[in-house]
Length: 286
Image (cartoon, rainbow, N blue to C red; front, top):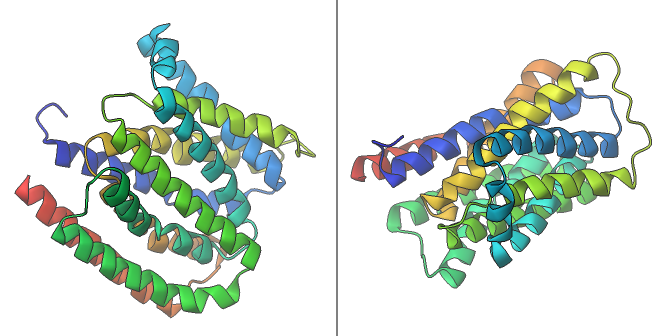
């Protein structure tokens, strides 16, 4: 990593994070535990996993880093907690493609917020990529909306807004380490879920699926996603999340036969090609 440019570091972290995240929707669908039980485990398992790892690295400095994160840390704890809850509830109340299409608006929202608050208007390449992918998302959206549920779709949009605000917050605090704030956010998610959990029992395949999902699709990616905006603009980080818009529904389609529409597939191909070209050009220039 030391030999990479900031652009290469940020792009690599964002790409790897999203690749870990892509099976997340499938694992949520495969789990049989109730919604709030799932939210609880997705909070508490990543909390202990990442907290233990960071405590081994930083020792008591973990708490010092947390306290020095200031207002940025508070904002990130709030947005991170909200998006972790709304994502799961959205997935379980609408078609997977609907939720991921809503989340795919995050790059556009990040670009707008970054231009307003950070004075970082996207460059021409990023702006063109955002416009193309946003149009692809709209194309997918009009077909997928009729298949879903309004409640789940709205929560998907709230998730996108939270991702955008969180990424811009990290970008505005490049000198600060906000991973401890994300760890606290996970703890708050678990505590909030406790108010609604009816059953903690993991049975049958949930004994494997839930811990695996919480570590591979939640704990590892949230660390990478929290670090990536320190190296590249928030809009570029969230641009990688568009890969989940197409890959996530494909995982679900292959395993449980929840088939994505032809519009999702066509729009997804455009999204993947656009991100690939954008990343290649940015990395070449760096």
